[in-house]
Amino acid sequence: ELLPLVAGMLLVLVVLAWGMSAYLNDEPRTVGTAGGTSQQAAGSEAAGSEAAGEEGGEAPRVDLPVWMLLAIGASSLLVIAAGGYLIFVVLRTRQEREQERLAAGGAAGSDAVRATHRVRVAYARYLEGLAAAGLGRGEAETPLELAGRAGDALPALAGPANTLTRLYEPVRYGALADEAGADAAEAALAACLTALAERGNNTEEE
Amino acid sequence: MEAFGRRVSENVSRVLVGKEDVVELSLAAVLAGGHILLEDVPGTGKTMLARALAVSLGLDFRRVQFTPDLLPGDITGVSVYRGTGEDPFVFQPGPVFSNLLLADEINRATPKTQSALLEAMAESQVSADGRTLPLPDPFIVVATQNPVEYEGTYRLPEAQLDRFLVRLSVGYPDAAEEGRMLDRLRLAHPIGSLGPVSGAPELLEARRAARAVHVSDDIRDYVVALVQGTRSLQELYLAASPRASLALQAVAQALAGLSGRAFVAPDDVKRAALPVLGHRLMLRAESRLRGASAAGLVRALLDRTPVPVEA
Image 1 (cartoon, rainbow over the protein chains, first blue to last red):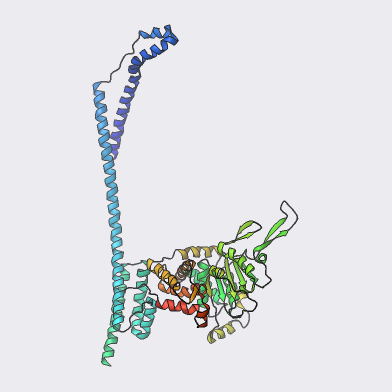
Image 2: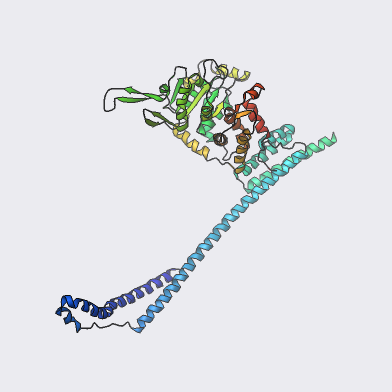
């Protein structure tokens, strides 16, 4: 996309360089006419007749053709416009890529956030279920200790409670979450709640 | 790291029957880059644990029996007069120039000799004859002391105790373990046939892996809460130092790594708490007379410090 633009700019730069070179080559001669007088005035005392010998000759002034001046002006405008466009294109491309990257990362990030939320909600509901069954967590009790105590109190709970705890710990302490883990955590929660409900039914029957 | 730990633990357990927990904590201390103080009555296998660790890890091992007449130079090394060359004195490195130094019955040596170990343990270097000499890497000190014998001993100063990452007690085996030990050691002691299952480069790599184990903000705050908790205990005249926080975190990381996890769980911190904090808490005399102990205080602290879980 940018190749013709760059090539055009290079061409314009060449024309500009050529024009400027011609102009600058001409300049010393133009300046030399005025400077020649002063140099001659300064040098007349030192050089005497040698300087006087050159006084009569005036360097010819070479004016740039109008078309070249117009070309230089137009080229300058073109270079400025092209440069501006080039900067715009580069910035726009960079912004688009950044947006694409953020969109991709955001999608992955939002998946992880959603999975984390699901696992933590599942664990919170498990804690509520345990508390309702009289197996509330002590504030200094770790998830693993709680799972052990719950399993001792209700053997049917041991398996799913352990599974849920093993899925919860990496999420809570390791920031490691994925959708599959969240699905498994919700399944383990369902098993825990079933075991707790069965225990409640048995207690009522007794 | 988990495989490395299992390999070493199984090898050490061939010699030390039924002490998997102590072996794993020792290994965690080694992985955390610390020194170990083994405190127990004679005959429980303290020296055997140090030897088995050194052999299993494939480390250069030296043993020094600490006695009241032991001099600092006997540990760090001395300059010997050779009488040849520009410098007629040649430094003869002491046993401290090894990968694993067993300081047996460390509290039998004078404080001057004990403190000669201090620089080596803290800085991994030795200053002798105006020169500073680096110690090999890894450099691990495993010191033993008998907690019931006070005659002819010099209690380790608090500063030196703080240099030990953990204090462990091997403890008596139960009946089943003791029976298994008799069976296993009937023909010959397995320490003679124990071979290395690792090497210093693998240990250094495992140390790097242990340091990379993730510590969440909640777990970090839990570690801080535990250490800060010791500073409000009225029973103490000296609570856990900031070095204790670092030690607790490092040992918890190593334990997590040995369990095959990439993150520290509260159970790792709880498990590391007593070995790391126990020897750093100095009880007031009146608290000791009332029956308080550092272990009891740490357990009480663990029982009342909230663990970060869902509200």
